[in-house]
Image (cartoon, rainbow over all chains, first blue to last red; front, side):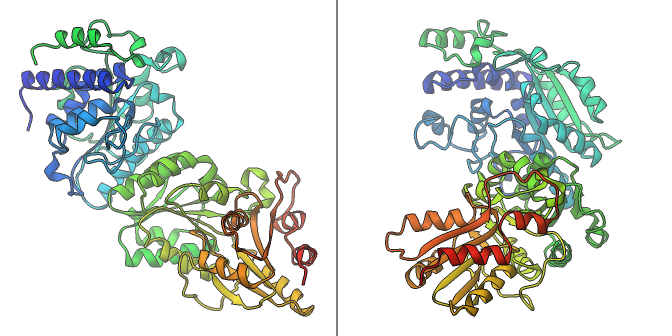
Length: 272
Length: 307
C-alpha cells in the first residue's frame, strides 16, 4: 500500500531526524551516507516491497538488503517506525549489549543478511532471488549499494552472473552520492559512466533522482523486464541530503554532530 | 572421490528437494546426471568464488540447502571473507566441498595446492571441518553435513584414492573412527593419507610396537573424548595429514594438549612443511618431497618413539 507523497516526505524527514539523533547520541559516523539513501529505504518499506513484519516468517515475502551496511541507522529508524522492533531499542543503539550495532547483524528482527563489509549484498541477493525462483515464489529482491561499494570485485562478479540467470525479480539501487570515504567516487576509480557500465553488463539500467521517492516506488513496482534482465537504479543523490551544511561535504562521512549542530540540523527538517 | 561426491549428492538430492548444487566452473561432465534430474537445482556460478559463497548464503537464507563445489584452494583462499561474513556470522547451513585438497592438484603447481585450508577454516566460529579418508567416508559425512544447522567444509581428494572401508561406515561428525587398536602409539590421520597411516602401523607392529590408527575425519569439532583417553594410555600420539604442520589436525591436537596438563603421551605432528612446493611433479612426488610416504613417516615415528 503506497502512502501519499506528502506522507512519504514526512516519513523521510522523521528518519533523517532519527539518523541525526542516533549519530549524535552514540557518537557513530557515516552520517552523510545514511542521509543520502533515506528515500530509497522509504521507497522499499513504504510502497515498493512486501516487507511488513506480519510477513516475517513467510519465505515468499520480498527481501531488502542494505548492502551499504554503514547506513545502518537509516535502516534501524525505518524498521522501528514499521514496528519490526520497538522504537525504544533505538535508545540503546550501539551501546554495549544492544542488538543494534554500528552495522546490521543477522538475527536482529528485520535483518536477513550480515553487511558492513562492502560487496556482500549483491551475491547474497542473487542467492535469495534464485531460492525464490527455485521454490516457485514470486519474491522481489532489492539490494541497496553505495557507489564506493562498486570498487569491490564481488559486485561485478554478481553483475555478470545475475543477467545470465535472467533474474528479473532482482533490483539493485545504487546510492550514487559521488563520494566514498576519502574521495570522489568517480576519481578513486573510473566509475562513470555508471549506468552504461551496468547496461553493458546486461541490466535494465536506469538513472533516477535518488531523492524522488515516488519514482523509486514506481520502479520497484514496475513489471519485471520482459527480456529477463535484472534492474539497476543508478540513483543520483546528495551525500548528507536534507541538512544544508552537511550536503555534499564529505567531512560528514566521519564527523559526529555536536549538540548545537544537531539542533541546527533538526530545525531544517521541520515540520516533523 | 569426486565421482563418489557426484553420485552421492545426486542421491541425496532425490530425497531432499532443498539441496542445490553450485559449481565453480569445474566438473565438466561430473554432474550430468544431477543436471538431468534436477535442472533448476544446479548452477555453474562461473569462475567467481567470492560470489559463489554469497549466492550460497542467499540460497540458505531463502530456505534451501546449498552445496558448493570447487577446487579447495579457490573455494577457501579466494572466498575466505565471504565464508566468514556470509556463512559463519549468520551460521548458515552451507556445505563447501573442496576437491583436490592438500596436494591433489600437485602437478598444477602451488596455485592449486591447499595445505593451509584447515588452518584458516578451523579458526572460524560455527565452522565444521571434515576430511574423509575415502569415498565411503565421504558418502557418510556428506549426508551428515547436510543435517548440520551451520556451515561445514569438507576437503576431499580427487580421483582414484584407495578405499579404506569396504562399505559405508556409520560415522558421526565429531567422533573419530577406530581402524585398529594398540597401546604403544596412536596414529590420528585426517583425510586421504589413511592408507599410509595403516601402512605405518603395519611396519611398527612388525617391530612389536602396538599401534592404533584412527580416522580423524572431523577436525572441528575435535574428538576431545578420544584425545583424553589416548593421551593417558599410549606413549606417543602421532598426527598425519596432507596439510601443513601449522594449524591443521596436528595444530588442533597440540592446542588441546597444551590445555590439558595431565596429558602424558608425547605428540608428533606429521604434515607438509612450511614452504611452497615450487617444482613440478605429481602428487606422489609431492608427498615424497613432504615426507609423507609410508617409509618416511615410519622413520620419523621410530625416531620419536621411546618404549
